[in-house]
Image (tube, rainbow, N blue to C red):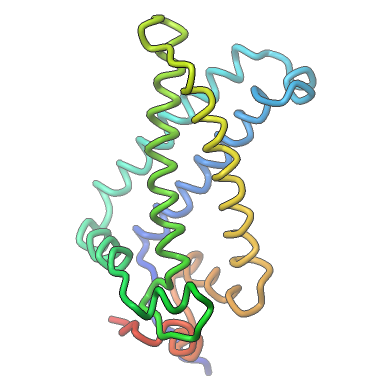
Length: 197
């Protein structure tokens, strides 16, 4: 029987899937607003704009609620795990074998970019919404920022999905974010610095 170790808590998994659900809902409604062919196909632009806006509010609120109601100590521990970046992480990014902690250098960069995108999406989205109601909040670069973030986030999402679902050497990580555990052998091979608790 394969021994398994806990990699992600219930709170960490809930944050991950809430973030994924919120992002995909916003991506879908945003693409309807962005692509003329989808806009014509779906129609009802005002309704789609409302769905997009309130999904954004719900996305951020859901993440905040999970963080407040969940295991806050565990979230802080995860933040510390994501924060550290030593020579081994830099070597790993240059494609040299190097032991990694609970998160490898790529996962740390992904988490940092995802957090930055979430904040920038929220701020630029609020400015766009407020700008439709009050011209003082209209800035020429807000649409460019929001659209540019969408392209960058989709690129990041495609890479994330490839590594989580398709790539055979990293696909086992999907088990960790769905049920919380990974095989001890896989953890030792991919995350040698990590000491499961």
